[in-house]
Image (cartoon, rainbow, N blue to C red; front, side, top):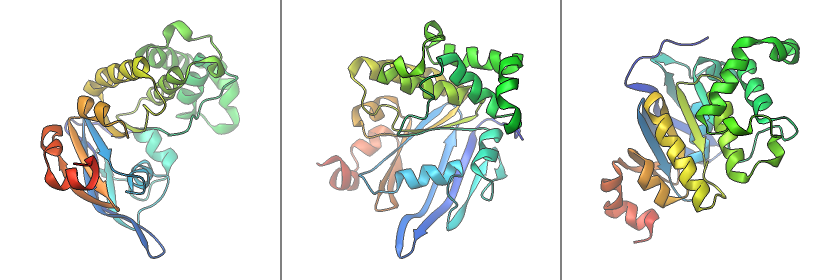
Length: 252
């Protein structure tokens, strides 16, 4: 089920709360992701960033609040249903198939969005639509020259690019990216930031990232979380000079 996309806000969380027993991991967090914008979420370990992205993607339900995708309440939807409706998600850990080629990884991702699970391999070989989607996604992610290379032989940065290509193969409106720059060197970081800059125009992007230099370079808006709560949400310039943020997170 693909929802009708409109301009402006594509994904909205309202007063999202998640409790684990007596622990409040996310406390009444509201967030909006707009097409053409990179919205970064930063915070120390345990701030609630990963829990928030898991709730938005549908991997865990909220204890309170709601999630809207393209104007429709999807709070009760499963992760696969949200993925088919327009949410692409990458993870801190690699989720690629190392023995499959770059092309095969992208094709499987494209196929998984539409095909019945007991026919996925047979149809993946024959489906022109998934083949075209796979090639287009790999090209967008800068991996077209590496289509036939086994994913396990890619560099770390190329593997992260492949994860984004696999997201793109599902034709998402929204990209939820969990630390895509983790473990990258300077050159790989520059390549990834350039890719995110290119993808921004057609998508709403949520970026959870610890690399502060990269965040302040690429983000249009930054939300700062501490102990499950949002303490600030503003432009990078405003966040950089916010006394509460400086005290709680940036170390000034």
